[in-house]
Length: 478
Image 1 (spheres, one colour):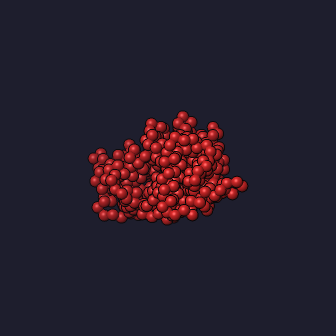
Image 2: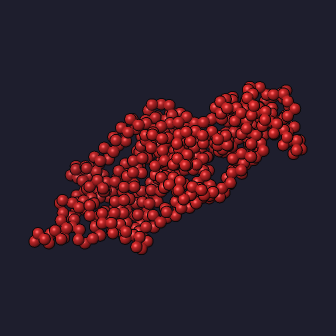
Image 3: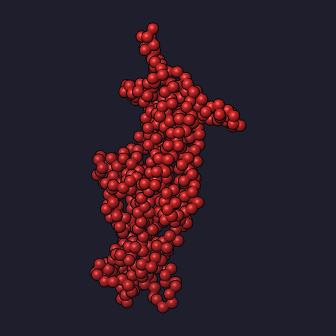
Protein backbone atom coordinates (compact mmCIF):
# COMPACT_ATOMS: atom_id res chain seq x y z
CA UNK A 1 0.00 0.00 0.00
CA UNK A 2 2.87 2.37 0.79
CA UNK A 3 4.23 1.97 -2.77
CA UNK A 4 0.89 3.02 -4.19
CA UNK A 5 0.68 5.96 -1.88
CA UNK A 6 4.13 7.12 -2.93
CA UNK A 7 2.75 7.86 -6.40
CA UNK A 8 0.35 10.41 -4.97
CA UNK A 9 1.16 14.07 -4.94
CA UNK A 10 0.36 14.27 -1.22
CA UNK A 11 2.75 11.55 -0.08
CA UNK A 12 4.86 13.91 2.00
CA UNK A 13 1.76 15.19 3.79
CA UNK A 14 0.59 11.64 4.48
CA UNK A 15 3.99 10.68 5.85
CA UNK A 16 3.81 13.71 8.08
CA UNK A 17 0.36 12.76 9.37
CA UNK A 18 0.52 9.05 9.99
CA UNK A 19 2.95 6.74 11.68
CA UNK A 20 5.15 4.71 9.32
CA UNK A 21 7.27 2.57 11.64
CA UNK A 22 5.78 1.06 14.78
CA UNK A 23 6.40 -1.79 17.25
CA UNK A 24 5.03 -5.01 15.77
CA UNK A 25 2.37 -5.41 18.45
CA UNK A 26 0.99 -1.97 17.55
CA UNK A 27 -0.78 -3.43 14.50
CA UNK A 28 -3.14 -5.19 16.90
CA UNK A 29 -6.70 -3.97 17.42
CA UNK A 30 -5.71 -2.58 20.83
CA UNK A 31 -3.70 0.14 19.14
CA UNK A 32 -6.47 0.98 16.64
CA UNK A 33 -8.87 2.19 19.33
CA UNK A 34 -7.73 5.82 19.15
CA UNK A 35 -8.12 5.77 15.36
CA UNK A 36 -11.58 4.18 15.66
CA UNK A 37 -12.54 6.92 18.14
CA UNK A 38 -11.50 9.47 15.53
CA UNK A 39 -13.66 7.72 12.91
CA UNK A 40 -16.62 8.09 15.28
CA UNK A 41 -15.76 11.76 15.69
CA UNK A 42 -15.79 12.25 11.92
CA UNK A 43 -19.22 10.56 11.71
CA UNK A 44 -20.49 12.79 14.51
CA UNK A 45 -19.32 15.93 12.74
CA UNK A 46 -20.79 14.92 9.36
CA UNK A 47 -24.13 13.71 10.73
CA UNK A 48 -24.29 16.72 13.09
CA UNK A 49 -23.82 19.18 10.25
CA UNK A 50 -26.61 17.49 8.29
CA UNK A 51 -28.93 17.64 11.30
CA UNK A 52 -28.16 21.33 11.83
CA UNK A 53 -28.99 22.23 8.24
CA UNK A 54 -32.16 20.13 8.02
CA UNK A 55 -33.68 21.01 11.40
CA UNK A 56 -35.73 19.29 14.10
CA UNK A 57 -38.84 18.58 12.02
CA UNK A 58 -36.70 16.63 9.52
CA UNK A 59 -34.90 14.48 12.09
CA UNK A 60 -38.17 13.85 13.98
CA UNK A 61 -40.40 12.82 11.06
CA UNK A 62 -38.43 12.13 7.87
CA UNK A 63 -37.19 8.51 7.50
CA UNK A 64 -33.80 9.71 6.28
CA UNK A 65 -33.70 12.26 9.10
CA UNK A 66 -34.44 9.55 11.66
CA UNK A 67 -31.62 7.45 10.19
CA UNK A 68 -29.11 10.30 10.34
CA UNK A 69 -30.20 11.08 13.89
CA UNK A 70 -29.70 7.40 14.74
CA UNK A 71 -26.24 7.38 13.14
CA UNK A 72 -25.39 10.37 15.30
CA UNK A 73 -26.57 8.57 18.44
CA UNK A 74 -24.79 5.28 17.69
CA UNK A 75 -21.61 7.19 16.83
CA UNK A 76 -21.75 8.73 20.30
CA UNK A 77 -22.15 5.30 21.87
CA UNK A 78 -19.23 3.89 19.87
CA UNK A 79 -17.07 6.95 20.52
CA UNK A 80 -17.41 6.63 24.29
CA UNK A 81 -16.75 2.87 24.18
CA UNK A 82 -13.57 3.24 22.12
CA UNK A 83 -12.26 6.19 24.14
CA UNK A 84 -12.75 4.24 27.38
CA UNK A 85 -10.95 1.17 26.04
CA UNK A 86 -8.26 3.31 24.45
CA UNK A 87 -7.63 4.87 27.86
CA UNK A 88 -7.54 1.45 29.49
CA UNK A 89 -4.87 0.21 27.04
CA UNK A 90 -2.78 3.32 27.68
CA UNK A 91 -3.23 2.76 31.42
CA UNK A 92 -2.32 -0.95 31.30
CA UNK A 93 0.76 -0.49 29.11
CA UNK A 94 2.08 2.56 30.96
CA UNK A 95 1.66 4.79 27.92
CA UNK A 96 0.97 7.67 30.29
CA UNK A 97 4.54 7.66 31.62
CA UNK A 98 7.00 10.46 31.02
CA UNK A 99 7.46 11.92 28.38
CA UNK A 100 3.82 11.20 27.47
CA UNK A 101 2.14 12.44 30.61
CA UNK A 102 0.76 15.55 28.93
CA UNK A 103 -0.71 13.38 26.17
CA UNK A 104 -2.73 11.63 28.89
CA UNK A 105 -3.93 14.96 30.28
CA UNK A 106 -5.13 16.12 26.86
CA UNK A 107 -6.85 12.80 26.18
CA UNK A 108 -8.59 12.91 29.57
CA UNK A 109 -9.80 16.44 28.95
CA UNK A 110 -11.15 15.41 25.54
CA UNK A 111 -12.99 12.50 27.13
CA UNK A 112 -14.72 14.67 29.71
CA UNK A 113 -15.64 17.27 27.09
CA UNK A 114 -17.09 14.48 24.94
CA UNK A 115 -19.32 13.30 27.80
CA UNK A 116 -20.57 16.86 28.38
CA UNK A 117 -21.11 17.24 24.64
CA UNK A 118 -23.14 14.03 24.54
CA UNK A 119 -25.42 15.21 27.33
CA UNK A 120 -25.99 18.55 25.60
CA UNK A 121 -26.91 16.57 22.49
CA UNK A 122 -29.67 14.80 24.40
CA UNK A 123 -30.96 18.19 25.55
CA UNK A 124 -31.36 19.31 21.92
CA UNK A 125 -33.34 16.34 20.63
CA UNK A 126 -36.69 18.13 20.96
CA UNK A 127 -38.51 15.25 22.67
CA UNK A 128 -39.48 14.24 26.21
CA UNK A 129 -35.96 13.02 26.90
CA UNK A 130 -34.75 16.54 26.12
CA UNK A 131 -37.21 18.08 28.57
CA UNK A 132 -36.38 15.71 31.42
CA UNK A 133 -32.62 15.79 30.91
CA UNK A 134 -32.68 19.58 30.66
CA UNK A 135 -34.19 19.83 34.12
CA UNK A 136 -31.99 17.15 35.69
CA UNK A 137 -28.85 18.61 34.15
CA UNK A 138 -29.85 22.10 35.28
CA UNK A 139 -30.10 20.86 38.87
CA UNK A 140 -26.56 19.45 38.63
CA UNK A 141 -25.13 22.64 37.14
CA UNK A 142 -26.99 24.82 39.63
CA UNK A 143 -25.84 22.71 42.54
CA UNK A 144 -22.21 22.91 41.46
CA UNK A 145 -22.36 26.63 40.78
CA UNK A 146 -21.96 26.25 37.02
CA UNK A 147 -25.54 27.39 36.58
CA UNK A 148 -24.23 30.93 36.79
CA UNK A 149 -22.74 30.39 33.33
CA UNK A 150 -24.86 27.58 31.87
CA UNK A 151 -28.65 27.52 31.74
CA UNK A 152 -29.44 24.00 30.65
CA UNK A 153 -33.03 25.05 29.88
CA UNK A 154 -31.92 27.66 27.35
CA UNK A 155 -32.10 25.81 24.01
CA UNK A 156 -30.30 28.52 22.08
CA UNK A 157 -27.39 28.64 24.52
CA UNK A 158 -26.94 24.86 24.64
CA UNK A 159 -27.28 24.70 20.84
CA UNK A 160 -24.36 27.10 20.41
CA UNK A 161 -22.22 25.27 22.95
CA UNK A 162 -23.02 21.88 21.39
CA UNK A 163 -22.43 22.66 17.72
CA UNK A 164 -19.66 25.27 17.99
CA UNK A 165 -17.77 25.71 21.25
CA UNK A 166 -17.20 22.13 22.46
CA UNK A 167 -16.60 20.63 18.96
CA UNK A 168 -13.93 23.26 18.27
CA UNK A 169 -12.31 22.55 21.62
CA UNK A 170 -12.35 18.80 21.00
CA UNK A 171 -10.96 19.16 17.46
CA UNK A 172 -8.17 21.40 18.76
CA UNK A 173 -7.31 18.97 21.56
CA UNK A 174 -7.55 16.01 19.17
CA UNK A 175 -5.08 17.66 16.79
CA UNK A 176 -2.72 18.45 19.64
CA UNK A 177 -3.12 14.96 21.10
CA UNK A 178 -2.29 13.25 17.82
CA UNK A 179 0.54 15.67 17.04
CA UNK A 180 2.20 14.70 20.32
CA UNK A 181 1.67 11.00 19.62
CA UNK A 182 3.13 11.51 16.15
CA UNK A 183 6.10 13.33 17.66
CA UNK A 184 6.72 10.85 20.45
CA UNK A 185 5.72 7.74 18.54
CA UNK A 186 3.80 4.82 20.00
CA UNK A 187 4.92 4.06 23.54
CA UNK A 188 7.38 1.17 23.68
CA UNK A 189 7.45 -1.30 26.61
CA UNK A 190 8.89 0.33 29.69
CA UNK A 191 10.18 -3.06 30.85
CA UNK A 192 13.59 -3.85 29.41
CA UNK A 193 12.80 -7.57 29.42
CA UNK A 194 10.11 -7.19 26.77
CA UNK A 195 11.37 -7.80 23.27
CA UNK A 196 9.90 -6.11 20.22
CA UNK A 197 10.83 -5.17 16.71
CA UNK A 198 9.96 -2.20 14.57
CA UNK A 199 7.78 -2.94 11.52
CA UNK A 200 5.83 -0.99 8.92
CA UNK A 201 2.40 0.14 10.05
CA UNK A 202 -0.37 -1.85 8.38
CA UNK A 203 -2.50 1.04 7.18
CA UNK A 204 -4.67 -1.22 5.05
CA UNK A 205 -5.69 -3.19 8.13
CA UNK A 206 -6.24 0.03 10.07
CA UNK A 207 -8.56 1.56 7.48
CA UNK A 208 -10.35 -1.77 7.01
CA UNK A 209 -11.24 -1.67 10.69
CA UNK A 210 -12.47 1.89 10.27
CA UNK A 211 -14.70 0.95 7.32
CA UNK A 212 -16.08 -2.03 9.24
CA UNK A 213 -16.93 0.29 12.14
CA UNK A 214 -18.79 2.73 9.88
CA UNK A 215 -20.82 -0.10 8.36
CA UNK A 216 -21.62 -1.47 11.81
CA UNK A 217 -22.85 1.93 13.01
CA UNK A 218 -25.03 2.28 9.90
CA UNK A 219 -26.45 -1.20 10.49
CA UNK A 220 -27.24 -0.49 14.15
CA UNK A 221 -28.82 2.84 13.19
CA UNK A 222 -31.09 1.02 10.77
CA UNK A 223 -32.05 -1.87 13.06
CA UNK A 224 -32.23 0.11 16.31
CA UNK A 225 -33.21 3.70 15.46
CA UNK A 226 -32.87 6.42 18.03
CA UNK A 227 -35.94 6.35 20.33
CA UNK A 228 -38.06 9.44 20.30
CA UNK A 229 -40.64 10.15 23.00
CA UNK A 230 -43.23 12.83 22.27
CA UNK A 231 -42.62 15.98 24.35
CA UNK A 232 -45.10 17.15 26.96
CA UNK A 233 -46.83 20.45 26.17
CA UNK A 234 -48.82 22.90 28.28
CA UNK A 235 -51.67 22.60 25.78
CA UNK A 236 -51.75 18.87 26.35
CA UNK A 237 -51.97 19.35 30.14
CA UNK A 238 -54.63 22.06 29.85
CA UNK A 239 -56.81 19.83 27.69
CA UNK A 240 -56.32 16.57 29.59
CA UNK A 241 -56.24 17.91 33.14
CA UNK A 242 -57.43 21.54 33.35
CA UNK A 243 -57.71 21.26 37.15
CA UNK A 244 -53.98 20.53 37.36
CA UNK A 245 -53.12 23.55 35.24
CA UNK A 246 -55.40 25.73 37.33
CA UNK A 247 -53.80 24.48 40.54
CA UNK A 248 -50.33 25.16 39.13
CA UNK A 249 -51.30 28.67 38.09
CA UNK A 250 -52.60 29.37 41.59
CA UNK A 251 -49.24 28.27 43.01
CA UNK A 252 -47.47 30.58 40.56
CA UNK A 253 -49.79 33.43 41.57
CA UNK A 254 -48.92 33.15 45.26
CA UNK A 255 -45.25 32.20 44.67
CA UNK A 256 -45.69 28.71 46.10
CA UNK A 257 -44.61 26.60 43.11
CA UNK A 258 -41.45 24.55 42.71
CA UNK A 259 -39.92 27.31 40.62
CA UNK A 260 -40.86 30.08 43.04
CA UNK A 261 -39.36 28.15 45.98
CA UNK A 262 -36.41 26.67 44.07
CA UNK A 263 -33.26 26.80 46.15
CA UNK A 264 -29.92 25.25 45.29
CA UNK A 265 -26.33 26.35 45.68
CA UNK A 266 -27.36 29.21 43.40
CA UNK A 267 -30.82 30.29 42.33
CA UNK A 268 -31.03 30.84 38.57
CA UNK A 269 -34.82 31.16 38.63
CA UNK A 270 -35.09 34.55 40.24
CA UNK A 271 -37.93 35.73 38.04
CA UNK A 272 -41.30 36.60 39.56
CA UNK A 273 -43.59 33.63 38.80
CA UNK A 274 -46.69 35.76 39.34
CA UNK A 275 -45.50 38.20 36.70
CA UNK A 276 -44.31 35.61 34.16
CA UNK A 277 -47.02 32.96 34.49
CA UNK A 278 -50.06 35.05 35.39
CA UNK A 279 -49.75 38.79 34.78
CA UNK A 280 -48.04 38.96 31.38
CA UNK A 281 -50.13 36.24 29.64
CA UNK A 282 -53.35 37.62 31.09
CA UNK A 283 -52.62 41.25 30.15
CA UNK A 284 -51.70 40.16 26.62
CA UNK A 285 -55.06 38.39 26.30
CA UNK A 286 -56.89 41.34 27.86
CA UNK A 287 -55.37 43.66 25.26
CA UNK A 288 -57.27 41.77 22.55
CA UNK A 289 -60.62 42.16 24.34
CA UNK A 290 -62.92 45.19 24.33
CA UNK A 291 -65.65 44.10 26.75
CA UNK A 292 -63.77 42.33 29.55
CA UNK A 293 -63.00 43.71 33.00
CA UNK A 294 -59.42 43.53 34.29
CA UNK A 295 -59.67 40.85 36.98
CA UNK A 296 -55.98 41.14 37.73
CA UNK A 297 -56.46 44.78 38.64
CA UNK A 298 -59.28 43.93 41.03
CA UNK A 299 -57.19 41.20 42.67
CA UNK A 300 -54.17 43.48 43.09
CA UNK A 301 -56.25 46.21 44.73
CA UNK A 302 -57.61 43.84 47.40
CA UNK A 303 -56.04 43.72 50.85
CA UNK A 304 -53.97 40.71 51.87
CA UNK A 305 -56.76 39.14 53.90
CA UNK A 306 -59.24 39.32 51.03
CA UNK A 307 -56.66 38.00 48.57
CA UNK A 308 -55.94 35.00 50.80
CA UNK A 309 -59.66 34.26 51.14
CA UNK A 310 -60.25 34.48 47.37
CA UNK A 311 -57.27 32.20 46.73
CA UNK A 312 -58.75 29.56 49.05
CA UNK A 313 -62.16 29.86 47.40
CA UNK A 314 -60.55 29.54 43.97
CA UNK A 315 -58.66 26.44 45.06
CA UNK A 316 -61.94 24.87 46.19
CA UNK A 317 -63.66 25.91 42.97
CA UNK A 318 -61.01 24.41 40.66
CA UNK A 319 -60.65 21.23 42.69
CA UNK A 320 -64.32 20.45 42.00
CA UNK A 321 -65.23 18.51 38.87
CA UNK A 322 -66.34 21.51 36.89
CA UNK A 323 -65.63 21.93 33.17
CA UNK A 324 -63.36 24.86 32.41
CA UNK A 325 -64.73 25.74 28.99
CA UNK A 326 -65.99 29.23 29.84
CA UNK A 327 -64.90 32.16 31.96
CA UNK A 328 -67.14 32.12 35.08
CA UNK A 329 -68.99 35.25 36.12
CA UNK A 330 -68.19 35.63 39.81
CA UNK A 331 -67.25 38.29 42.33
CA UNK A 332 -64.03 36.42 43.08
CA UNK A 333 -61.52 37.85 40.54
CA UNK A 334 -59.14 34.92 40.92
CA UNK A 335 -61.53 32.40 39.34
CA UNK A 336 -62.06 34.20 35.98
CA UNK A 337 -58.38 35.20 35.97
CA UNK A 338 -57.14 31.61 36.24
CA UNK A 339 -59.92 30.28 33.99
CA UNK A 340 -58.80 32.66 31.25
CA UNK A 341 -55.23 31.33 31.45
CA UNK A 342 -56.42 27.71 31.37
CA UNK A 343 -58.44 28.43 28.23
CA UNK A 344 -55.37 30.12 26.74
CA UNK A 345 -53.46 26.93 27.55
CA UNK A 346 -56.03 24.78 25.77
CA UNK A 347 -55.73 26.89 22.64
CA UNK A 348 -51.92 26.76 22.65
CA UNK A 349 -51.64 30.51 23.09
CA UNK A 350 -50.36 30.34 26.66
CA UNK A 351 -47.22 28.33 25.84
CA UNK A 352 -46.56 30.57 22.84
CA UNK A 353 -46.72 33.61 25.10
CA UNK A 354 -44.25 32.08 27.56
CA UNK A 355 -41.75 31.31 24.80
CA UNK A 356 -42.03 34.82 23.38
CA UNK A 357 -41.81 36.42 26.82
CA UNK A 358 -38.23 35.21 27.24
CA UNK A 359 -35.50 37.82 26.87
CA UNK A 360 -33.70 35.64 24.32
CA UNK A 361 -35.13 33.65 21.39
CA UNK A 362 -35.34 29.88 21.58
CA UNK A 363 -35.17 29.97 25.36
CA UNK A 364 -37.91 27.68 26.77
CA UNK A 365 -36.83 28.18 30.40
CA UNK A 366 -40.24 29.54 31.45
CA UNK A 367 -42.11 26.73 29.68
CA UNK A 368 -39.92 23.94 31.09
CA UNK A 369 -40.12 25.32 34.61
CA UNK A 370 -43.92 25.54 34.37
CA UNK A 371 -44.09 21.96 33.08
CA UNK A 372 -41.88 20.92 35.96
CA UNK A 373 -44.17 22.69 38.43
CA UNK A 374 -47.16 20.65 37.23
CA UNK A 375 -45.38 17.41 38.19
CA UNK A 376 -46.34 15.78 34.87
CA UNK A 377 -42.75 15.44 33.69
CA UNK A 378 -41.68 13.57 36.81
CA UNK A 379 -44.72 11.30 36.62
CA UNK A 380 -43.88 10.40 33.03
CA UNK A 381 -40.20 9.87 33.85
CA UNK A 382 -41.22 7.59 36.72
CA UNK A 383 -43.36 5.49 34.38
CA UNK A 384 -40.41 5.22 32.01
CA UNK A 385 -38.02 4.23 34.84
CA UNK A 386 -35.70 7.18 34.22
CA UNK A 387 -35.91 9.22 37.42
CA UNK A 388 -32.87 9.64 39.67
CA UNK A 389 -33.85 6.78 42.04
CA UNK A 390 -34.22 4.59 38.93
CA UNK A 391 -30.72 5.49 37.71
CA UNK A 392 -32.24 8.07 35.41
CA UNK A 393 -30.44 9.26 32.27
CA UNK A 394 -28.53 5.96 32.02
CA UNK A 395 -31.18 4.86 29.54
CA UNK A 396 -33.89 6.32 27.33
CA UNK A 397 -36.46 4.14 29.00
CA UNK A 398 -36.39 0.65 30.45
CA UNK A 399 -35.63 -2.08 27.91
CA UNK A 400 -35.07 0.26 24.94
CA UNK A 401 -32.08 -0.10 22.58
CA UNK A 402 -29.83 1.81 22.24
CA UNK A 403 -29.20 2.63 25.89
CA UNK A 404 -28.96 6.19 27.10
CA UNK A 405 -25.97 7.82 28.77
CA UNK A 406 -24.76 4.65 30.52
CA UNK A 407 -21.47 6.43 31.21
CA UNK A 408 -23.27 8.44 33.91
CA UNK A 409 -23.49 5.28 36.04
CA UNK A 410 -21.10 6.70 38.71
CA UNK A 411 -23.51 9.61 39.22
CA UNK A 412 -26.45 7.23 39.48
CA UNK A 413 -24.54 5.08 41.97
CA UNK A 414 -23.81 8.05 44.22
CA UNK A 415 -27.40 9.28 44.05
CA UNK A 416 -28.69 5.87 45.14
CA UNK A 417 -26.16 5.14 47.90
CA UNK A 418 -24.28 7.53 50.17
CA UNK A 419 -25.89 10.67 48.68
CA UNK A 420 -29.42 9.27 48.70
CA UNK A 421 -30.55 11.23 51.77
CA UNK A 422 -28.31 14.24 51.14
CA UNK A 423 -30.30 17.47 50.84
CA UNK A 424 -27.47 18.90 48.72
CA UNK A 425 -27.21 15.80 46.55
CA UNK A 426 -26.65 17.67 43.27
CA UNK A 427 -24.03 19.97 44.76
CA UNK A 428 -22.01 17.25 46.49
CA UNK A 429 -22.35 14.85 43.55
CA UNK A 430 -20.99 17.50 41.20
CA UNK A 431 -18.08 18.24 43.54
CA UNK A 432 -17.20 14.54 43.85
CA UNK A 433 -17.32 14.03 40.08
CA UNK A 434 -15.24 17.15 39.52
CA UNK A 435 -12.62 15.94 42.01
CA UNK A 436 -12.47 12.49 40.40
CA UNK A 437 -12.05 14.10 36.98
CA UNK A 438 -9.12 16.18 38.20
CA UNK A 439 -7.50 13.14 39.85
CA UNK A 440 -7.94 11.15 36.65
CA UNK A 441 -6.29 13.87 34.58
CA UNK A 442 -3.42 14.21 37.09
CA UNK A 443 -2.94 10.43 37.43
CA UNK A 444 0.49 10.28 35.69
CA UNK A 445 1.84 12.86 38.13
CA UNK A 446 0.66 11.18 41.37
CA UNK A 447 3.41 9.10 43.03
CA UNK A 448 2.57 5.52 44.07
CA UNK A 449 -0.86 5.72 42.42
CA UNK A 450 0.73 5.92 38.95
CA UNK A 451 2.56 2.66 39.66
CA UNK A 452 -0.58 0.58 40.25
CA UNK A 453 -1.05 -0.54 36.61
CA UNK A 454 2.46 -2.01 36.68
CA UNK A 455 1.52 -4.08 39.75
CA UNK A 456 -1.39 -5.65 37.86
CA UNK A 457 0.97 -7.02 35.22
CA UNK A 458 -1.58 -6.98 32.39
CA UNK A 459 0.67 -5.21 29.89
CA UNK A 460 2.37 -8.44 28.83
CA UNK A 461 -0.86 -9.61 27.20
CA UNK A 462 -0.97 -6.45 25.09
CA UNK A 463 2.71 -6.44 24.15
CA UNK A 464 2.91 -10.16 23.41
CA UNK A 465 3.59 -10.80 19.75
CA UNK A 466 4.37 -14.09 18.03
CA UNK A 467 6.94 -12.39 15.81
CA UNK A 468 9.10 -11.25 18.71
CA UNK A 469 10.75 -12.86 21.69
CA UNK A 470 11.60 -11.41 25.04
CA UNK A 471 15.23 -11.02 26.01
CA UNK A 472 14.86 -14.02 28.34
CA UNK A 473 13.48 -16.16 25.49
CA UNK A 474 16.31 -15.20 23.18
CA UNK A 475 18.87 -15.91 25.88
CA UNK A 476 17.34 -19.35 26.53
CA UNK A 477 17.53 -20.26 22.83
CA UNK A 478 21.24 -19.43 22.67
